[in-house]
Image 1 (cartoon, helix red, strand yellow):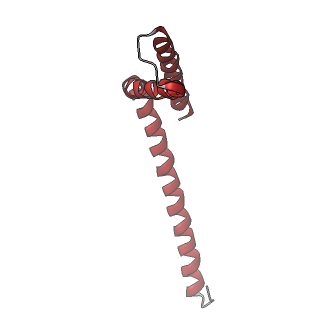
Image 2 (image 1 turned 180 degrees about the vertical axis):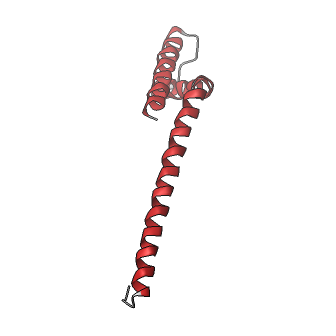
Image 3 (image 1 turned 135 degrees about the vertical axis):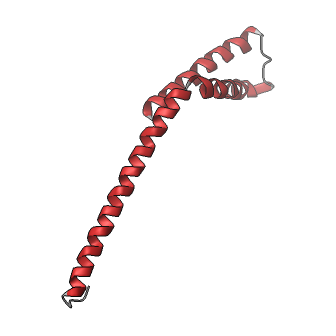
Length: 99
C-alpha cells in the first residue's frame, strides 16, 4: 500500500510541475489575483487523478489483494479465539463452576 501511495504522489508531483510550467509559460490561463497557487494545485489534482487511475491499475489491484488477505487472516484469528473461549466456557459449565 505504501508503494501505491508513493507512486500516486509521484504522479501528482509530476503533474504539478507540468501544470506549473504550462501556467507560467502561458499555455494554461493564470488564476485570478493571489489564487494562482491554488489554481495550479487544483489543475494538477484534476489531471493526476485519471492518470493514476489508468497507470496504477495493476498496483492498486495488488494492494487490494494484500488487504483482503490480511482481513481474511484477522477474521480467522478472531473466529479461532471465539471458539477457544466457547470451549473454556462450556467446560466450566459442565463442571458446575460459574463462568
